[in-house]
Length: 253
Length: 281
Image (cartoon, rainbow over all chains, first blue to last red; front, side):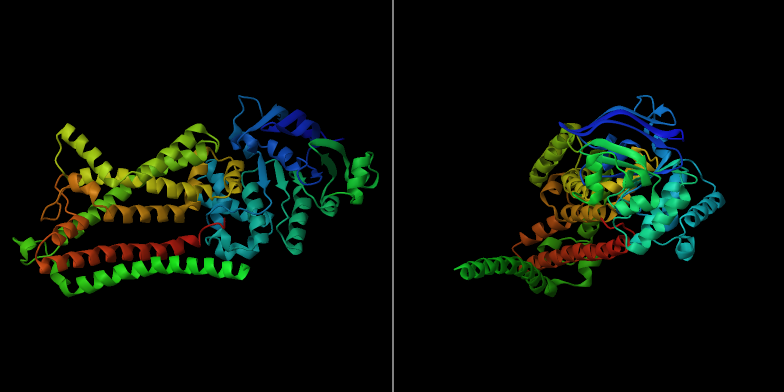
């Protein structure tokens, strides 16, 4: 890796009750690149993603041991405030979940939480973020209508804009296109390619072709372990591990 | 044989449904048939004149006002108590929490306690503190009676909020309290249903107000004055030997039913409007 790591995972183990879902994970996620986690369902790739912004905190019976360093700071350190960590990351989930607010309200929610009160400033912020996700032209005339009136594809881009509005450094995507039609998927993928100039992007995906299209690096996760990690082309064309080979050839999914 | 079984149980289901729907219309029909002849403007615009319960002129405006004050006050007070409980249960406590389970169990038990028990319990307290029956005492007692209904209904609404929604708020850097507010917005139609159910139970309850709210021929003028209520008005009029007064009891029942009906319809309409603002869940 030529880049300095943005997220560095060290000896991370995660347990759901007595079941161990992540086993001794060590990985460095490079700065301002797209890194994709691939692997079969239930392999732990989403669990791993969620450790990055401590979303397991509120879940029951989940125990995390090990370190996750973001900008060199261990986010599982007792002194670290969780909202401060989460503010650094925007999360996109499998299906878009707009807040029960207007389109404007969704984008302005984060900045308002963090103390932006000035109305003209908020207006400008909302416009900037909606333009960043190429949604502005589609919604500028109905900013104050409920966000649920948008199509699923638009909602997912809105959720991305909402995440960007808190000025994160990292975008986490948990299969963010799995509920979208091909056209919207294409738009979101293009966005990722543009956004990686400014943000570190970590994606969970089960679509190999998507991983190939958008990512610089691929991590293959299987049974709670990282099997292989490398630059996209290298890992897909010349996998070193037998398991990776079998997965890419489609022997299991 | 299978077909016969299918037929048999289907018939059973249809009969059960018809029985319930039939009883509903039976009740409405009886109230209308017996109440309508005694229904007039005086009933809803006048308070009882002297000798009203022996058949003199007057109406039940005192009880209409008392019931509305009492049910509104109790619903508002119960909402103020229930919302924090539900927020705490759903946002601050983990789902497996022992405290959460005990709390939910307690509310299930409280839900099943007859209202007369609430009434006598509050009455004992009132005697102890030397208070007289009043609108305020009635409101507090009935609020305690409807809190379990509200908590359980709102709890369901909060639980049905998708986990991803609170995750979304958290990942934007929201604190628990800020996330709780998002969930309130999301659960707003459930909260509204809860308030409506509570209001219906509050306005229809007799036993809890019998000792605590008292009764009187005047519209309650303050929280400290006794509050007449429709269910008690119905009870008193129905116990009269005079048929004319008994007919007025049915007219009062008609008024009570009408109030509940208007409020449920209004709340449905309001709910539809709010629903448009909601995220699908």
